[in-house]
Image 1 (cartoon, one colour):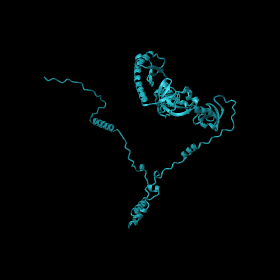
Image 2 (cartoon, one colour; image 1 turned 60 degrees about the vertical axis):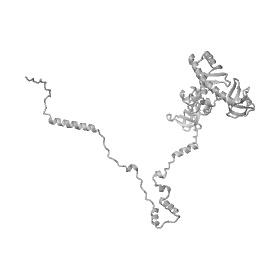
Image 3 (spheres, helix red, strand yellow; image 1 turned 120 degrees about the horizontal axis):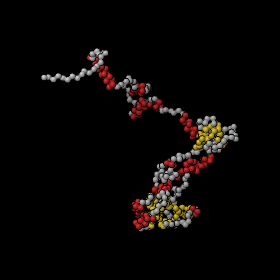
Length: 417
């Protein structure tokens, strides 16, 4: 066993082991460690602990010191320098007309090297760009081309699940993901549904792949010839999560039924012919439903009890108490337990049960108003005016039956001499 501490650098979420050299370091503290690229500034993710010798990559680097105030100031200065380098590099890329996208910039702790990370579709000739950047920063310049997955890991973001990206949170290295995993899990093959922020298949498809593969070994394949408690048929669908099978029976092929995996006996796995297959006389037994499922179905079938207030009973009857009697007892208690003289009749009246008031439905108390026909008043007025004008014209007009109305010719008036 070797005593180590785990540290994490800014560029990713992978943990690296370092020899503490007798120092007791707590998680969350910043340390200065020795790496193959020189001295670096890192954060301790796990304090002193023991790990097997085979889990340590030799040679095991050591911790130089716990970060001091000057180390924190140097790290802050390097962060400001990185922000300035981003703007200068983007301007240089535009001047040279290079087809590349700058993703991130990292400055070493000692300040003698600056690394520029970029993405591009193909190979890029950036030799002139390196010369210009070296002349500006007076340091060793290194340009690294990365993929879209590394870009998402550096930049971070929120996935479609609403949580931060797994690659930027806890994934040490990228795991291979294939489209076969989406098919095994019966997911939609729409690229927008199964792709992450990087445009590649989501890493979380790998998380449950082992459980789906284990369930697929126990479940029958599609189009298998099976025997069920209701007869024989072919498998038309498989639900791996519920471990249920959808079977299209020969007796009722238009209405498939669902069965549990224990209720199905496989007679032929996969597609094929039924010739030579012997169908057993005894059918598989039907499994009893689970206790939780049966309780849920029983709760649905039971009638719902309506509270007494909603059922129409009076409040006094619902509580089983006479309000007048309780009020009388309270008044007696306030006077010291001695009832007043002359309260006998009043008390007897209060003890009489209240008459029941018949509830009348609110809809029955509403008076039914006569239905008023809606008509177009303007059209009626216009029709009445037309009839009146027609009658008035008929009374004044002469009898013109058999005559033709003609216009009188225009005559020029006489001129006076």
